[in-house]
Image (cartoon, rainbow, N blue to C red; front, top):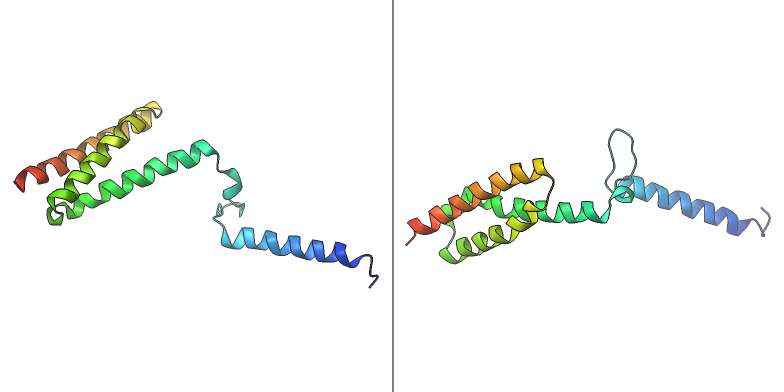
Length: 116
């Protein structure tokens, strides 16, 4: 192999390995096989952030009776912080997640009141 072509070949091999890593290790759309990482907009990342917080808070309602009063109070505060974020979403999302957040918070408040 010609020595002046070696860097070009190494570059191509490196690029192929990197592309393989992107398709194997990073999240992909299963229908197309395209990495989803390159399609995430900052607004989508922010949306995922509040949804993750929503899921983290509301998933604990299943175990709410076993939580301490302090834990319940912290979850209620987190619900209150999520409310304005959800109110800033488009109409359908706002209605659905707003109602779910309200029900989640109401349950946490009810459990907190029963622990007095």
